[in-house]
Image (spheres, protein in one colour):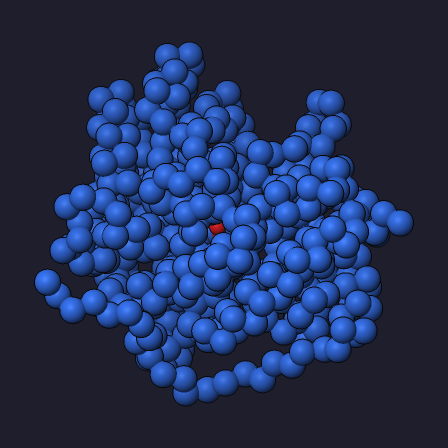
Length: 462
Ligand code: F0G
């Protein structure tokens, strides 16, 4: 039997640091009040440990920083663009690359070239910007994720899976010719960073291909998904992360990627495709909305750092193991103290079950928003609401949507914080949990019409 390692450490050491400071309790109370109890409206200078998002918040390596200096800023035919094409082809396996300024740029182009008004796009739980672009192009999103994804305390190894029965029912109802593609997200963000299995990817791809339906991945967090396949799916223990990632992509016709996550850069993204004709149509749109086809929305240096980030993320399996391991470390501490969280712990963050924690508040008092504000006030840790405020209102009835998942997301940036930062975070969350009945409910004082979670303001009820 191989020796078991009980501890793990990051496969890097720290060369540069950025100072942070913790405000006093009184200062934090003022800061969150001035921010209208919305963590999006806090100044980052007032935040001690910033777990708002893992998007664009990663630390780059020395090799990536060096890449910034040698990026080729040519308007057309940049050398850095070709480095990026090679990296995407080598690591993800797609021959056609369409660079964009970030993930939603790729979602926009893909939706516009494939969706005709009246089409239906099945997907495994929505993501805000993905669904927005599908609807902007005239499509209708239908959720075909397995039921377990909506149940925070049900432990299923692959909660991101598509329910083939639900998918078949949609195809029967609207016909394959009204379904341009299935939108298949890896490591589903809104479900809590939950993976899809290789078996499910394969099944969905075969099902779709028999019916002439394309499969488009949201491969934004496919690396983290590859790790869960390696750990949880029979037959993959001895496969490298690199090999698993390329197998994931082999069951698709293309992918949109926000490079601000797995790819270890602060800005960037791409649409990758197999079909040269589709890629030609995407490039024709790209020049109008993003930029020339050899830079999309990125500077040459951004593409150089991105090309290097893509290779680096699969260079050793230790990178993703310590990344997800750090998230698990945080999640285990919080769960072991009895705080209800989404199970199992996901790839990019720990999702607190605000409905379970703040059950002294009625749902109208915005439990997750209230909990996120209380966590900031306790020790300066910034989290994000993912519940009723994010879900918005029903356009027909005007009522709040009350999603089954009312969550607070503690999202861990890559290579940024240490285990001690995770300890402080866990202590703070646990201490708020112990005093949870004192967390005041919130009500809106300002409510934007769309994507309200970004700029809404609140006040405590009493
Ligand atoms: N797809 C997924 C799964 C995402 O999580 C995001 C962004 C996007 C697409 C859009 O990419 O931001 O580069 O335009 N998620 C961020 C988050 C905002 O905090 O989860 P983008």
